[in-house]
Length: 386
Image (cartoon, rainbow, N blue to C red; front, top):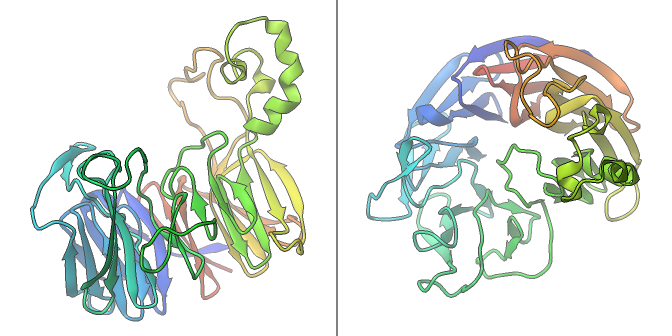
């Protein structure tokens, strides 16, 4: 049904997605180097922990532990009840720093959301296989922080993977193997063949809509993907389909250049607005399928029971001038209205919609205990319920 705000708490301007466990909500504030713990029922602050660098994504909760990576090149493990540190693992004994986004970080930063599986904390540290000795992938004992596995991916003379240009990402698992974008490992971090689980070509934290790049998993493919069992749900950029349908119309412009460069420059109806929400049957071929074109840009999507919950902004009109790309209204260049929508997972039928006071943070929704938790770009964390 329709969701109303049960509580809201202001965290900070660079809030991440929330994660919910028992009676606690955990969220990071990236530029404040802080992890917050709130009471799930009323949003009251319970504790906060100050790290030595930015935390770009929410912590991972395992048993009573709160574990997260940090831009200082460390992984921290806290007592989830009290916020006291249990252990800290440093990827380097040397406290080196490099300039990154107007601040100092380790050359081996770690994303906040680590993967914990079979009492092992898996994560990738580094920026590229071409920099600073490459990317290091670790597996730690979750109870002690002791190193169990380590794998170095490097394309320079310091590593065995000559010629492989790779970027790090949050690791994902299908229960058997681990994915870092298109690179796959077994549980001991040996390279594994095939594809499984969730794969993000551009990275799970990348919030830019890249044409022909995105997430894939459970049989779905798009800029956002949710899947459970045999059914998948995807948010798809309409650019590709619109380009194919309109291809013959570009001949009238008689201009040299690639089709992608021509696409949005001449007629307003050629500019792809909104998104396509698609339900697929998954690899096993069973499950309902449907597709809806919406004047809506979802930035967060979760599947909760038989409901598909999306948050984003209404995309009703082209807001920039053709060719120049300048705002049509410089005084209000981004007048989008943000909303949260609920659809029936079975057939995509709209159930309800409510306005949001600000745009949602990318991929920043969680569902637990009958409530939806949503981070907004104005720094607020909301709890919504019927």
